[in-house]
Structure formats: structure tokens, C-alpha cells
Image (cartoon, rainbow, N blue to C red):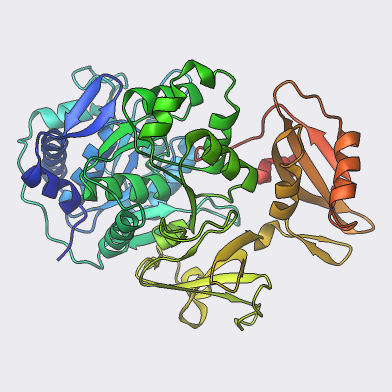
Length: 516
């Protein structure tokens, strides 16, 4: 028997008054989070939600997220977290595809009217029976006619609940992939998948009971959800929530809340390094308190690693994983030799190989596709047996990511297979080009894609964000790159931009760059 809600409940037994979540001036103890989750579980039970039902959740990093998340799990149901940027048609698709019986949605803001979009999507999903609107003020009336608020639901429910017993292999969460190769599909993660991943993270980070984590990663995403929320509650930590990442707010929280662990995607670390008013904060205090940085979600440029470690005097460890792997599959341990650019070695209980198109191991040092097996691998794609079978060829999960391995067993991400550029018959990996471009003194951020070309099939194009105060020209960047790279690698096309499009999780949206 195993239910992820145990991660919350154990802290209630051991230290009920300890602060679990900080959000601005709001500080909630483990007992308070648990009591609210119990009320939500009671509300779900009263609505007819039973073990195995699917319940969707759209909510940014607010204290309501863990309340609802664990409330759904306590009821024996499966959580379906949704990206907060989805529009109503996309929401309706996710509700229908996941067979969601109920849906919790935050009201949002004038700039991001999540509640309106969620309500419209719910009304387009014929099989979803219940909708609860999460309002900033739980006592406020519903701003949407016909929509019951979470506060109204909780007000009539007791703060005690006997958690429904689930099995280790029951589905705890369905995480939807980004859908870059078609409609988004749901990765089914079991209670065991996520619990084991959280347990391994605790060991990787050498977590302490007094650790304080800054949570800027969106909790609807696997990185923030497992590595910070579930692993943090497993360790009995205090989690400091930011509704969305902003470098000024992040610096303020790092300084004021004595944060010891900060997890982020590369663009977050890049933003902290390049924030022009960083000196307004007590950087020495932040460096004394902060003991660990961890990056995932995308490849971390070596120049960013160097900059962060110099500024904050801490190890910045890079890991690798996917929604389908719960998510952590590979990580650089704190007791290992630092090799900038490496994602370390497979985590405990997980095997990784690098293979060619026929699933044969490639020679050491040569690039190939990462395939994985272990306790972290999803059950499959929900209601998609053919795609599940395709991903699980020969008993291994095929990631679609390209990597190399050195003589010490360290892995290095090269790129996504689908992002590889074939120029005149030569394979070119964008990440390699981006790493070189990031060493240019005027370049702050770089993204590289392939564009159609009549003669070569594809040509290499780079998008550059300059460092503050710098005004590089495309011609200057091209000339410099020609001196630094092989003739078939350097970009012939360069576009200078102030910013690059990014997802809600901070990944650069190369699909938008390709669309122009």
C-alpha cells in the first residue's frame, strides 16, 4: 500500500507546527496544509469521486496547489495538473483526453484570466461533472455565475479524513507532454514512480531537516512537482513559493527567507546572472546561506555554470529527466568530481544506455539516443497503447535525446534528435553551437535552429540576445563564429533579439523561432 499523501501526513505526526509553505506574508504549517487537504478530500468524496477517478488542477505556485494536490490523492483519485497558460479549447482537450470527472481552476488575473478559460473549457468537456473555482480570497463570492468556489466547497467539510488506501502501482499523476510531435499525451506516473524519485532526490541533495527551498519552478511541471514539492515534503522542508519567476522577487526571497536550495531551469540562472540591479541585494548573505543549486529541464550552458558558481559560491549540479521518468533519470552527485557540461550518472536503481537506430550500443564517446529502464519509468501513455509500445521498444524507454558518455561513465547531453540539423550531409547539434556562441563577450543568450535551404537541405540560424550595453551586429557574430567553428557548423544566419520566446517552465520555444 502506498499513497503520496503520506509525504504530507508524516510531517503532521512529526512536526505539525513547522512552516510548510511561505507565500508572501502567508505562512502555513504542515498541520494547516493537511487540514485543508482533508477538507478537499471530503468535498471530493461528497461529490462522488472515487478511487481511480481523474481530477484536473490548474493552479500557479500558490498554497492552494499542495492543498488540492494532496486532497485529490487522499481521495484515492489521480491528479491531472494542467499548464496554467492553456486556453479553453486546450483545457477541454485535456479534460476529455484524461477522462477527468472534476476540475479545480484558479481564478487568475486580468492579464491571465485562468478562471474564465477554465470555466469555458469545462463547459466544452461533456464528461467532466464538477468544477471548483479557486479564488485568492477563499471567503469571496464566485466571480463566475454558476461556478462554485473552492472556499464554498471546503466551508462545509471537516478537516479530518481517512486517506483512501492505494497500491504502489496505482496511477497517482497524469502529466501531459508538450505535444511538439502531435497532440499532447498523458504520461501515467504511479505512486511508486514519484515516491522513489523523491526519495532519490533527498539523497542526491543530501537534504537536511532545516533546508528551505525557493520554489519558482511551476508545480504543474514534473521538475517542480517531484524534485521540490514531493521531495521537499518528504524531507520536512519549508517551501517558499513564487507564483511566477522574476529575478528581483527571487533575489528578495533568497535574501529574506534564508533559502538553502534553489532549483531552476537554465534561463532562470541566466536571468539571475544578468539582472542589472542584483547588487541592491545582500549577495554575500545569499551566498553564505545558499548551499546548493540544481538545474534541469534543458541543457545548462557551461558559461552559466561558471557564472553562478562564482557569484554564489555553491555547487550548481545538472540533472536530466523527462515527464516520463518522474522526472529524474541522471544527476551529478555532490560527492562526485565536477565536470561542467555533464549531467552525471544514472540515479540509484536506474539504467541508461546510448544506442544507435537499431538499439545497438554506440562506441564510447560517440553520440546516440538515450534509453532508460528502472523504477522511475512511467506506466505508459494514457489510452495510447501504440505510442506506449513504440516508446518501450525492447523493454527500454526511448527518450529521443542524444548524448555521449565518457570513460568515467559521465553522460553529456548533445541535443534532441528532432532538433538535430543536417547541413549538406553533416549532422550539426544546436547545443554545441549555442555553447560556443555563449562564450562571445557580447552574447548573453543564444538559440540555434535549422532553416530550409535549397542547396544544403538546412542552414544554421542563430538567435542572439546581447549582453546589456552591447550592440553586436549579425555580421560580427558570423565572422567571429567562422573563426571558432568548423566550416559546416558556424551559423550563416544571425538574428539579434531583445528576448527569446519561452514556455511557462522557462524553456526556449524553438518551435516559435522556426515559425518566424
